[in-house]
Length: 352
Image 1: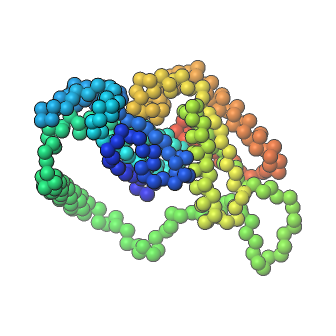
Image 2: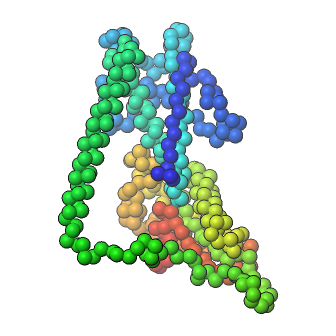
Image 3: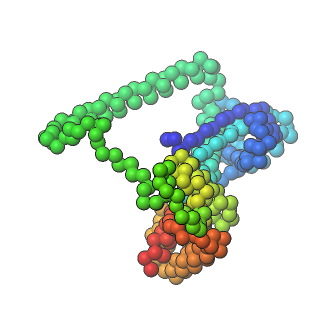
């Protein structure tokens, strides 16, 4: 997927996590870095992932005699001079889908990646009797066996997919008379350029036009952004900036006549639903604010829902009035777009 990428780089060091820049990041990268200290002993784990056999507070190795570990095990080991290893991990996530980029990236960082790594380190500790004493030759042999097993599984799946494809092709022979005989070069194009914008493209042989006062703005895009994250106001700016930069790049490439003439404004909406969102987040924290049941529940909270719709209409009018004050000659078209919550409230506002 060209719009989604996930990179995890790991460095193992014989310390208790005291190095500040083990990945040699630049000063600019350090400004944007978020440090999350993970302790596989005392950090809470989800109830559905908890396994007593993997609890480092209960587990004791039969081969090494290590464990159980107390919550302050790091301080005790450092004070006693015992060896401690820290796994430094640099995680980079990019999810370039407007309206959900910041939230999805934060969900991947805070919940998906963190929970997976926490459980993996608990398992690595609890399964040490299976790997303690292995030589590099043993590890290479296990890797080869795993690769061979995976290749066999993938080959079987590929064969099954090929058989299904052949069955579909043979069963579809009865529709041979409906095949499209036109060549690829003569197929109609579904690409439709925006000729209805009536851009001022002047032919070099046409007479000069009569000068008139024209607004510097041709299009206004109003972005209805749900305020799921009142504690992170920068998220709104990030999402809107990403959306605007995408539009600017398209204009630069395909619509040069619109350079500098497309304005994007943000209409915050949905803050009235914060109590519902916070309650749902406390019940199921693994989803964060992106809860599948949100669209069903908020419609049942009639009072808050209608307040959110009225607030959306009010803020949209205020935002438009503020824009017109800065562009008094604006007479172009207005487009509206919304994210997951903003789109729902926008639809309700337009149908009222």
